[in-house]
Image (tube, rainbow, N blue to C red; front, side, top):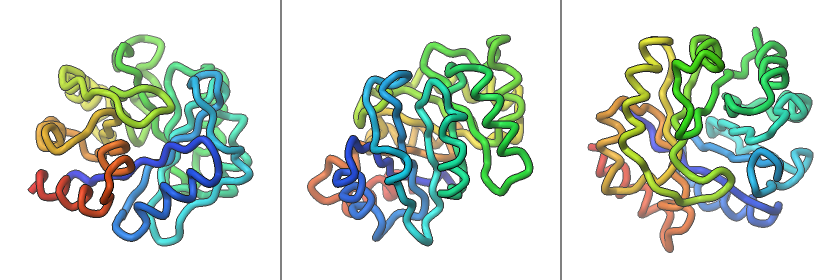
Length: 212
């Protein structure tokens, strides 16, 4: 069954703490967005000030032009998985992938809406990644619109890499979460529908019910 993964997208340490505390009581897996202000237009708190919650599987989405620059902090944090943008600096993406090879940290990639999984520039990354995230949102922000036509990428990803875990980020809500799950998405990274709710726990429960 697909898992709902609340997203933390913060621009200062106080906001980071607030968003984490909102989802820690009920989340079994979380997705933390980190932005450099270059590849993504917004900037997250300095990596040295970031921490991960105990007892919750944590994925980190590195929206950096040079993701390898985050390597030392990634190793300190020890997340379950690191997801990088396939469109970031190629040498830096490959450096990070190689450095994480053989570690306990899984390596995943994210594809922007216009990026095809079978593009010759990215197909090897798709083939080797443990997780492929279909991105349908706005880099560095909660919210956005879920473009369900992007579900056509799922079959192509699995054709290239049948073992890949499929994720989705952008615009998930009660009205579309079942369609995304039925379309093959296993990890439903959900930001605004939970973090912007007046009752995050209740919204999370309703999303789970919509999946049942």
